[in-house]
Amino acid sequence: MHILVIDDEPAVRQILAAAVAKGGYTVDQAATVAIARAKLARGDVDVALCDIKLPDGNGIDLVRETRAAGTETTFIMVTAFASMETAVEALRAGAADYVTKPVHNEEVLHRIAQIAALGGLREENRALRRTVSESAPRLYRFSSPPMQAVERLVSKVAPTDSTVLISGESGTGKGVAARMIHEQSARRDAQFLAVNCSAIPEQLLESEFFGHTRGAFTSAVAARKGLFLQAEKGTLFLDEIGELPLAMQSKLLNVIEDKEVRPLGSEQVRRVDTRIIAATNRNLQDLVGRGTFREDLYFRLSMFEIVMPPLRERQGDIRGMLAFLLRGTAHSGAGPGEVAIDPLAEEILLGYGWPGNVRELENVVNRARIRAEDKRIAVGDLPSGVINAGAPAAAGAAGAASGEPLREQVRRFEIDAVLRAIEDAGGDRKLAAQRLGIGLSSLYRKLDELGR
Image (cartoon, rainbow, N blue to C red; front, side, top):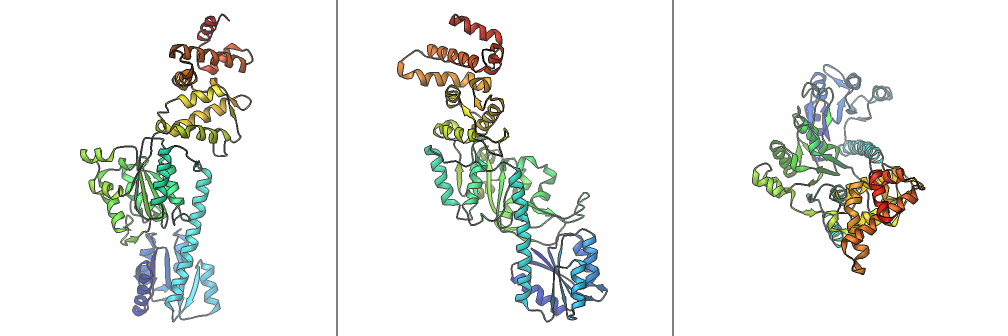
């Protein structure tokens, strides 16, 4: 937090400023209303310790002006003229608290800590509202050895404050792993803030990461906290870290090493206590070799690296994730409510290669949930590409024990799928063809092969 001490007595200002700095806050000073007004206008002051009697005005009037301007600064009034009337007037003007001279440093720090705690609670409430409106983290008990190894790494690094790099193909669950680290850390009660680095326009990166004061640039009509300050005491998850331009990589490295940020337009450096977890689907070592990613930042981020295995290498997890997705949640794009799945459709999903990994599995299941009749997913509810790619593998698995040639296994599998689709469609062959993702003529051709 950044504190502004406003008092016309140099000794009082210096004593308060020293106490506030010793308490771990950044601090600035102002001797007059005019100076204070200019500093407050930038919008980066969290708390103002303000004398009521000032040489060029009144502290209570300064509170009113600041509130009217929409600046979110919390005022604690400090005065030697203690009376109930001035206390009430200050509170009515918008001040949060009131202390009298001589000021005890412990009391002031206690009041500031209370304000910081209240601000943290507000941020937590905002974070909870965002979490409710977004997809909840999808956590299951992983059964495959590769994911059990990932869970062991998570449990080891979570209690530390180490930066973590999570690498892996798109859709493998890097965000889920990052949240697992946060939830198992001492920061679990603070905010987990996720940001996609590739989604922020380059010209806005510095403002988004470090914040800005009012008037720092043309469109900065109000001060804004950057991502590092928003995630204070919590975790900042930087997805797609490989997309950051070199200039921003240098500034990010400085923040990670120095644990300080300076908002655009501000003269004050702010201390930050934010854990960094980064993720990428690119090979950062290759980017370092090409000169598009800083080697020193790569080494700093990869102090502890977790590699997320693709879904094709952890087939043992698919059945469990499929069961989880079929149960349905209020956060599912297809709506809540459990659905069943035909064994044939399940075998196709188990036999598919999942190039899009977990994200593709979720999308396929949610699409099938929407299409399913009577809350039961049939083969025809799956995308044709999944059916065409998954059916041979499923057929091969089903007929491997019999020693049948693969062509005959696939033929029998297709016939079973067609007959089941017609049965599920109540004999409506056009509907069955639509559900199978094939043309009606193709359906009749397959039926001719059966003599139907």
